[in-house]
Image (tube, rainbow, N blue to C red; front, side, top):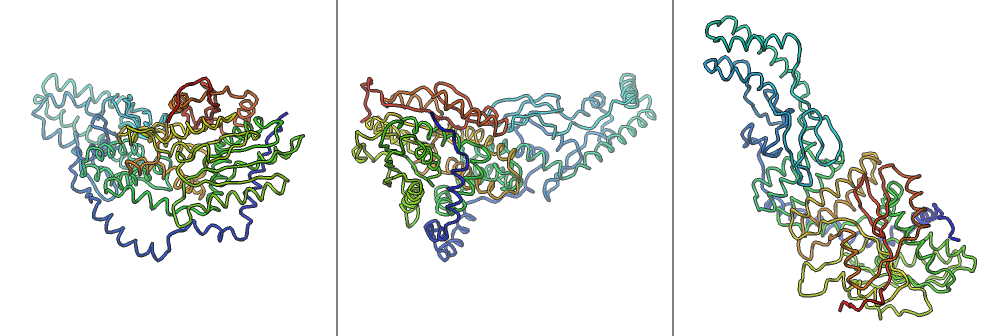
Length: 607
C-alpha cells in the first residue's frame, strides 16, 4: 500500500538548507564575476548599446496617421485616442482635426458634408477587425472588445460619447429638413443648428479629456501585445527604423513591476532590443553569469511550487512511480538528468524509510551540463553531498555520482548498471534545452541520441516530463507568436495569484520566465538553447527512438487530481490525454508528464 505524500518534507529540507551557517560561503561560485571586473566592463557595454540602438524621437511623427500606425494595426482605430481634439502621450501632444464646429461653418458649401454629419459623430464603425497575439483576426467590438492577449472581455476602451436624448433627435431632424429644403434658403435657422451642435461636441470633447493621460496610457497598455508583434515583424524584416520607433513606445509603457501585460512586454522588449542591436548572445550570457544565490533560488522555488503546484505535481508523479517500481527490491539506481537543487528527493527518501521491508540501497547518478562560471561542477556536487547527509539521518544509504558534460556524450556503459538494481531514468523538464536536428540536418540530433541511450539502458520505467510549447521554430515570427501566447498564460497566472509587490514573484519572472523568453527572441544557432516542443511531438520522437509508452497509473492520477482540485486555484487544470498527464492554466497546456519503457519488439535503432 502506497503511503500518502507528506507535504512538509520538502519544506523541512528547504529550512535545513537555509539554516546552514556557511551556505553563502559554500555557494560563492554563484557570483563568478568579480565586482571590479563588472565595474570595468560597464562603460564599454553602455558604449556598445548606445551605438547599436537607434534613437527615436516621437515628435517626428505626423498625426494622426503616424500615431495610429505606431500603436495599432492599420485597420484598427481607438476611440479613446481619436474622439477628442488632442491626444496626450507622455510629453508629446498630437493635434487632430475636428470634424465639427468651425470646420462645418467653413464648409457650408458642401451639402454632402452635412448629410454625413450624423455618421461622423460615431467616429468609428461599430465592428472592425484586429489581429490578436496569435495572429488571428478577431471582431473588434467598441462596446466591449475582446482583449487579444488575455482572452477575456474588457471595457477599457470606451465608445465615443453621445446621447440619444429628445433634444439631439430633434436637432438631427431639423438639420435633415434644412439639407433637403436647401440650407441657403434658411441661413438663420442653419446657424442656430450649427451653434447648438458645436456646443454639444465641445461638451463631449471636454468629457473625453477628463479621462486625460490615464485613459490614453491604458489604451496603449491594452495593445502592448500588438505592438510587440509589430516590432518583431520589423526586426525580422530588418526594418531598423520602424522597429526602433515601435520599441520606444513599448518601453515607455512597459515595466517589470506593472501588470501582467506590462511585465511581459518589458522582458520581450529586452529580447527584441538586444537582437536589434546585434548583442543578443552577449546579453543572454550576461544573464546566465549573474545567477541568483542558492538561497534566492530556494525561496523562488517555494513561491512557485506553493502557488502553482506544477513542480509539486511533477515531483509526486515521479516519486510515486519510482516507489512502486522498487517495491519488494533491495537496490535502486536512479539516473537523473539534471539534479538542480535536489528538492525532489526528500519525499521519496521518507517513503523508502517507511517501507515494511526497510529502505533499499540507493545509488543516484546525476547527469548535468557544466554550469557557467569558475566552478562548473560545484553546484552538482554540493547538491549530492547535501542529499546524502539528509538520507543518512533516516538510515538510508545513498551513493551519489555526478557526471558533468553534454547528455548525448554519456553512454549506457558509463553508468555501470548492475542487473540486481532496479534502474529508473528520470528527466523533469530538461530536454527543452538540448539541441535538436535544426542545426545539423546530416547528423542525429542530441535529443535522439539521449533517447537511444535510455533505450539501451532498458530501465523498467523512464519518467519523462516536458514543457509543452512550440517556440522552437527556425523563423523568428513563428516562434515569437507562439512564445507570446505561452508566456502570456504564465504572466497572467502570476498576476492572478501573487501580489505585484512580491519580491519572489519578480525573481521568478526575471530568472525563470524572462531568461527563457530572451534567449528564444534574441539568440540564434547554437546560442538559442530554449527549444521546447509539444508533448505530441515528444510522443512521436520517443516512439521513433524505440520506446514504448506506459499507461498512467490510475491511483497516482487520482491522488494528483484531488490535490490540484482541493488545494489550488480553480483555473489550474490537470487532465489525461493520450497517456499523458497534462497541467496548465485556463485551458492552456503548459506541462506534460508520461512514463516509458524500452520497446524490445522494435528493430529500429538510433546510431
